[in-house]
Amino acid sequence: MRSGKYRLRTALRENLPERLAARIPKGRHDCGNHEWYKAAEQTWRCYHCEPGFTDSVPWSEQEIEARRWEAGAMQVRAGVPQPNRHKVSH
Image (cartoon, rainbow, N blue to C red; front, side, top):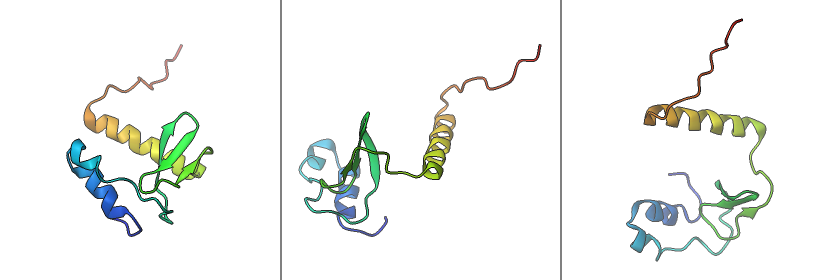
């Protein structure tokens, strides 16, 4: 687990049954080290704190590409059919 405020709360929310996790809110103050998730079309929120909010993409182009690669790898591990990327020659 990375260090920072509210990381333990986040770990508990991720691992406890939903009914118990709902009783452990995000931190009310800025955690100081945001880790983002896309909450809506143009909204990103921090996993750890309520003040962590932005309406612009919080990641660099390099991080976006790394996230796409990881998402693709996760799909392959899960057995999700991948699009055929072979070029057709005429």
